[in-house]
Image 1 (spheres, rainbow, N blue to C red):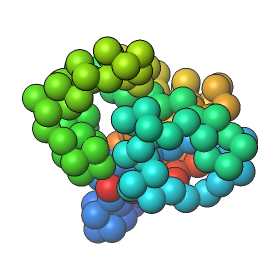
Image 2: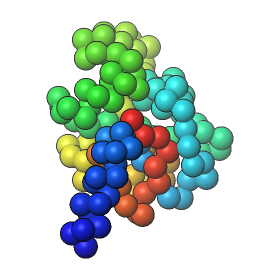
Image 3: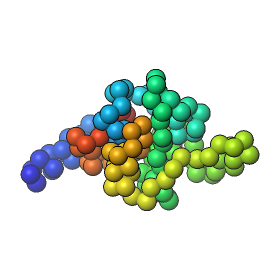
Image 4: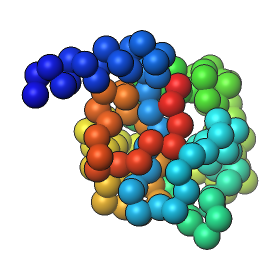
Length: 133
């Protein structure tokens, strides 16, 4: 088992995918573009087909959140804060947050339509990967 985990970690490093955007295995779609994910996390899009999507963000200042914000959302923290202040006055709230990758994964496993991001090494067959970055 240790060799399998080590091999998986080395393969992910070689493939360049450090983080994975995950959804429940119950959703019908299997891949999304970075633009679709960006629109979902900026609360500009709420559905993929007939499936309502609930974005889940990592709480705090973690490296993964910074990578997600710069790579997918194309914003730094200051610009994102300004964005959410403006959205607040239009009645739009930011995504839900979870305190850890494990809680994001459990939330995604149990709430159909939820979407979050975790280090790729944490991905297993309990969730579906729709994008890697």
